[in-house]
Image 1 (spheres, rainbow, N blue to C red):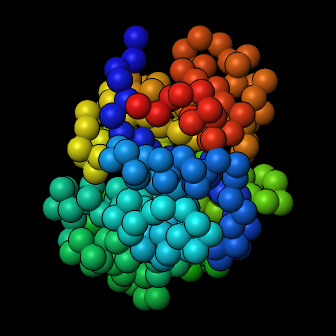
Image 2 (tube, helix red, strand yellow):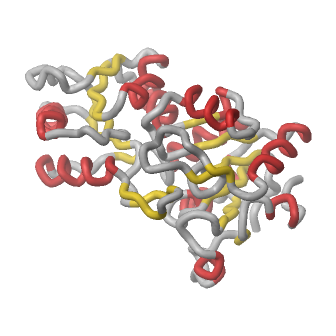
Length: 275
């Protein structure tokens, strides 16, 4: 039996909005998203948004979501880089090689971790390699990451899932392909710090000020949000507006089936699932 929900974590793409492939913030708001967030805000129930997209600094994403009418403060918007900044700081990492756009490394820099990019392939004096949103990745970047890992750096990734939901349908996750290339050369597995990692779940709970078991996790991907909630004892709310149809959610076997299957995020209100 799950614990009462005292705080919520929402996925973004496929749950609250559908974005475009470029990640430039052209959002289509999904049914009920605005009403659900506004209800939580007015009732004083804590909530955060955690996207596996890492290309933009969280305040930038929050501003774009506010621009389409969603109640999201800067501090409520989280990316895998938010989790990574916390995780690496706790491990005492001072310098990290970033494979990604400037927004990937900004949360690390804000937390005091020097974020360097592979402009100088001979410079491997880093303690960690972190892969995020990197549509312009080239072989120089791959080699710099491999050289750093061979020299002893840890290997981390924002997201290692192959697909995510957009307005145009299923799109590939660049970091998945980049990590596969690095892993094939170094034989080292990357530690995932975005969803569905336990690192991300614990970080979310700390942000909400509740226990992990008291978090309601709302998302569209059985390999991400639902899996993360089930594995950590949180409550899984699954929506059918992204990667997974409603029929597929309710047909899932015990152990993978979410606690609540919803047609859309607005069903949290319609079905009386908000405390």
